[in-house]
Structure formats: structure tokens, C-alpha cells
Image (cartoon, rainbow, N blue to C red; front, side, top):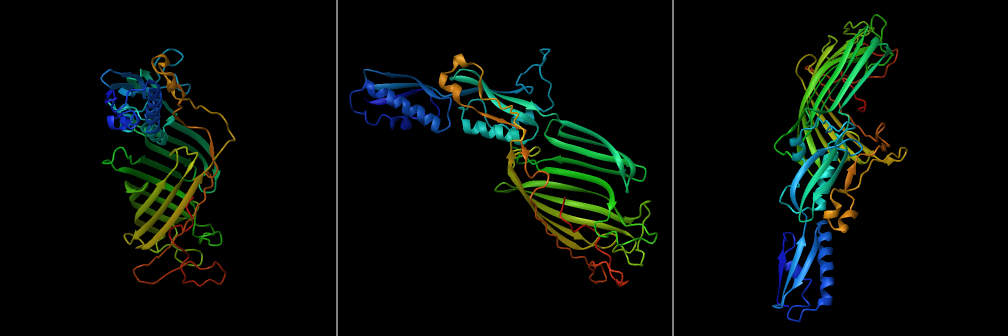
Length: 450
């Protein structure tokens, strides 16, 4: 044996292949030793993630040259196919499945490209990335063609993108009310989230609207961003039922505000969000009238008018290791937040708040409905039988996160409220003998986030 030649090889090099024939160089070619070399080459392909590659033919010549013909799974084309929950590309009427997701957006999440050699690790990363978008309930790969030239097809089944909810009831703040809420997890077909809730009652109207465009590692030059606008009213988180207004009603807080934030990566799976926030906080009774003092004449706000303005700049660092950002079943999420209040507007509120939270999700098998589909081969007759035994699928399973409703969470808040007169105030115990010159409380909640 004098030398080796490779045919149709791109991943396998002559230097690598030569290591499997090193005992035969300079010796007469031994036909009985060639099958072992073929097995070693095929094992090398599998070990390095080229699961579709294999040796097709090995031909020795009288000149001592061994020609190895391989098929490595060269990608001819990468296709996107939208399917239904059963994995079919057409409905019962034979019409193509309708979809909202923009194909260009999906392609930006995929790293496999035409001209590459198919590698299972890269395909698994693509499927995981698509699944983490939260907008697909099934993602898998099938093939068309043969091992020499094949088409890689990403089969995607979309989740129902919109969630519309109606409700109603009665409470002390709104009176008799009706509510409507809508959530779109794939707004514009770009995986953006748009949602809102409106409550209309006989005593008040409240709303909460949010837009989120998450940061994508596949688009490093495009920052994530979010916006939030709300109007909320409820029982005060600072003043309990022992604190009454001059008309003997209890204190209620109305908050009208919003925020805008930008998201960028920090490294090591951490993302950072820098936000500018504003909230107008007013203390009111059940009829919506503003009160500046309680029944004992104590001020309810730092401004002394019953209305404070809260301007703040916040920074949140998040480490999201969940398998799905919208419907997680495994993984964890850690967040650390610091918020600096700036003394602008009514009340001249100055303070710092620090919070940390951690949630861990554990799947449990209360529901066993499994839509997992194996790695299907579209043209089994064109591919060697060894290709039919490698499952590759990332599918959303209806598992329940054990701590999704009540996650393990730690929160700490450090208030430092200093009005212009440089007097320091703190909430005091609510007793009948409370001094009339003490501050009733802080203008924002210091309880853990919900």
C-alpha cells in the first residue's frame, strides 16, 4: 500500500483517514483488514457528529492506491415547512397549512446552510433555538434526497398565537366590572409579544399594556426592547386597614405610569435590561378623590399633596436557562434588579431598591400526552439503513413546572427616601398613640414582587 485517495470527502481528510491504515503502509494490501478500517472511519464520522456520513466504497488498485468513496450528507438546500400538530403540511382539504411566522425570521435562527456537511450537533442547536422562541409546539427535521446530496427540512408547528380572555366580577375598588385580555406571542410573525388587559368597572377603569421584542443571539446587532403602560388602583401596599382617611374610608393607591427598556447580552448566558420608569402615585378613597392626610392629619405622601412622582432608572441582569421562555417545563431563571429613584417632580423621591429572584422548573408527569415525533427520513430508499435509527426532535411537551405558580423567590428592598429638607422618615407601628408628626409610610411598595 502506497497512498490513499478520497472521493466526495469534505469532513474527512487524508491525514485522518491515513491513521486507520497506518499498519498497512509499505506492505501488500490485505483485503481482510479493509473492513476494519471502514468501520473505524464510520465510527469517526459518528463520533464527530456527522451521523449521515458513511463509506460507500473502498477500491484498491494494483499501484497500491486505495480509493475511498464516501457520502457525507452534503446539504443541497435548507427548507422551512410549516405543519399542523399531526406533522402534516396540508389540512383536511388538501390546502397548505396557514402560518404567521415570517420565514426570514426563522432562517435567521438556523445555522445550517446549503453547502455544509450535515452535523447533528448543529442541527440540535438549531432545533433548541427554535423551541426556545416559545412560538412553536413542535420542531423537528426530515430529509429529502440521498446521502450524497440532501435537502434538510425544518418542520414547524406553530402554537396558537393569540389568547383572548373575558371575565367579570365585583370588588371594592372597581365595583361591578368586566375585563378583556389579549396576548399575542408572535406579533408580526417575529416572535414579539404584545398583550394587554382592560378592566372597566362602575367605579374605575384600569389597564395594563406591554410590548416585548426579546434580544436574539442570532441578531447580535439588534438590541431587545420593551415598553409598558399601565393604570392600576387597589388597596395600599403601605397603609393597612388601621390607617383611615378623614371620611373614615381606607387608603387606596392609584398608579399611572410606564417604562421603556433596552436589552443586551452581558456574557455567560446573562442578559442585561436598562429601563427608564415613571409612575404617578396618588392616595385616594373609594370614590377616587385624592387625600393628602389621614384622619389624624398625618401626610400620606412626601409631597404633602397626596400625589408623588416616581422617576427611576433600573438595571436587571437575567440568566434564563429555561427550555422555553413562554411555556417552560425545565430549567431555571435568575434575575438581579437594582432601581435608583431620581428626585424629580412632586415629592422629590430619592431611594434605592435592590431585588433578587430565582425560579426553578421541574417537569412532572401528571399529563402524559406526548406529541414527540422522531427524526423522520423522507426518502428511506435513497439513504442507507443506518440513517433510520437516529431520533432528532425537540418538541414542546405538556409538562407542568412545579414552581411556575409559586416559584422559589428571594427579594430584598433597601429604601432610602430623602425629601429636600433632609429629614429622614420611616414607617412606624400603627398604634393609637402614634405621634402626629410621623410619616405614615413610603410611596412605593417594599414587599417582594409578585
